[in-house]
Image 1 (cartoon, rainbow, N blue to C red):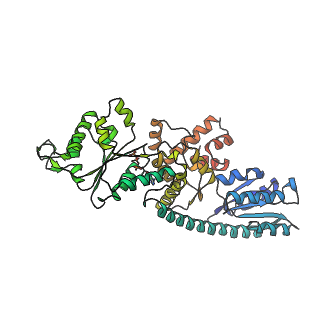
Image 2: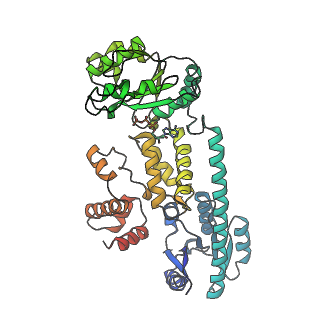
Image 3: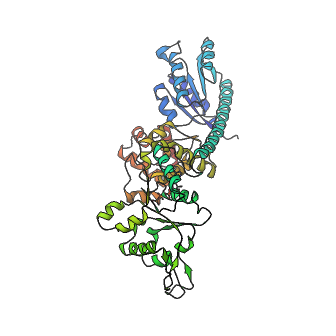
Length: 460
Ligand SMILES: Nc1ncnc2c1ncn2[C@@H]1O[C@H](COP(=O)(O)OP(=O)(O)OP(=O)(O)O)[C@@H](O)[C@H]1O
């Protein structure tokens, strides 16, 4: 038996026509949604992907004129220019159907229809949709390539005024050996900027050594950064160079510098002032030649006031400061970044999804993005895996209703498999709305039929 594919939407205000269409089409297509109220069309096509939309031209309101039919045809193509619309017209309306095809409809069938003819029309319309999507994928790929060419380096995306200022700063200071402090919230791309600084400097062929100071324990700090000699402590089986020595001739990136305790700040300052390191267990200082780039998401100036960060250390590391604004303050970068990650992950996971739906774009612009680009990147990765259609929808995302998710809930969600997370959100919404499907679907950003499908899938 042939496997059924395809998703069809039938819009007609005659419920008998809808029942007949549904009964027949269900035998040939995987999903058939029927709708008697044309006002629901924008919501339906914003939230779901249909291979073909079968649209009646003559709604009872304006019987015979087709005015409403033309209006809805325009609206559909406005929302989804790649939509494939087949019109249902009455005998005698062929002229009107021809006009509608000029306006962008794909084909028409006459009412009452012959089942076999209807089927043949819908199958060829579905093929057209597929080929339109293939073209869209090729265009998206090209867009991805162009994006890479217009980004500052091959990996930094964003042309917002704020990012242009950052690129300017990089260009101005990269060649100098000045110490640079990069300030910005988590996930804003501080390490990317540090790498770009190194790449554009004279030291580009020498090592770039990145050290996460937040992840090094107090006891291992000195041996990690400055090295040790054999036997200087129990686990020191042989002489080992520290990160500063490894970075010799190149750049060292000290991330999370705001997390250093005061005693360690003092040790670091000594090294920076003397430009020498002494391995633990040795008394021979070695001169070091490294370019220092530091970063933090902490309010270092307040910390200096509170005496939790040494002022002399701050002045040593911040010859040049680069401020990386949070993602919510550079709205212009949202779409290029989302497109970039969409292309990256659709390729990685071999998915056919290739665009961001208008509904999703709106939602993304309203969201706060507390985890910045890193959060966006993970959100798109998850959404690409979850997506069912060719366009990513808000329902493929886990926005926290515009609010920040409390820290503990966020880490609980991180550890949860996707299916479990979805199930939990559906249960929560149903409970909140006392089992009312329409309201729960609305809260979840799903259509009623997508919610039903999920209830079936999870046996809820
Ligand atoms: N402008 C950008 N273009 C492309 N990718 C970006 C951009 N900014 C950040 N990213 C990506 O977001 C993720 C986080 O970036 P990065 O690690 O540089 O942030 P960070 O500010 O150093 O974070 P943290 O403060 O948590 O250490 C990385 O995967 C990085 O590639």
